[in-house]
Length: 391
Figure 1 (cartoon, rainbow, N blue to C red):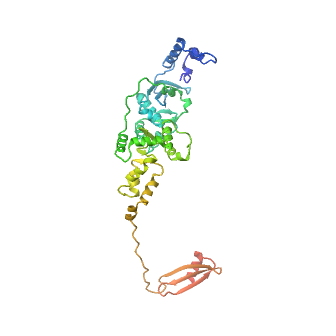
Figure 2: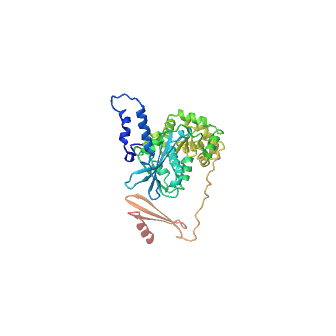
């Protein structure tokens, strides 16, 4: 962070000399009072008037945000005339025990919400730019694009909060986002006591306790299933840039919409059921034999796993009661031709052949059953019209 702002810090190299000496090759590492003093002075520089600037309503506002596995950081800055950034204020806090289990996308989004709420009096009512090192947030929280309908409930709630602000969101590579990055990695000694849980998530987890599979079972099965265990790790840490294997493709496609609650994987508000519990869930959905469409509609409110639609369809197709009682389409009544009142009122025509290199236009009068056959070289509409006119 000091290197990020070194342009504005006077005598920085002189102050940091004792600390740099610790990195010399062959020198034993020993922290002394001299090093502690240099460290204290370097921190004082970060909050001195040499670096911090007053808020100016005429200058562009930049809000840089970042999250680490245990903390959040945000820096509000002005973009100066030489296109550099000078900070107005810093903000950071540690994650609670529940927030540490958030997916990386949720943590990065929480850092943005922290910055916006902390600096509300500066950013509300004017345009500002949010910088994040998490590329998916450019799409998920874009002010001009719809929030994915299957995004986690907390993401949709935060998107609603951000909709009150006039902002643009840009991706900035993590190695260049050192100011907010440093703050997110400076945990405070105390952490928030609790984290508010959305009402719909509470209801979902309580509902699981009354179903054939419980939340504790889903949690244990998820950790014991190799694929879901890795998906859980990816959600909590970070997804790779490419899908690691074909088996992960359904989850990789939804990676920006997956979240974790009590070590259970959620897609939006739907629980991702491990293989060990899928049969019980299908049996519960099929208990009253509601049919394929109603089973799918009910399942889409609560659960999901890859190829769930196929599993539900196969369950109905292999159920004897469903097949016996299914609705058969009504038989179409026979509709005989009306009897013509005179010859050549209605004729029936068709082509026969090829035979002996010819096509034969066959015409039958519906009244007298008179038959006429006209040989022709081609069976085209032009040839057909000519034969009908000559008859």
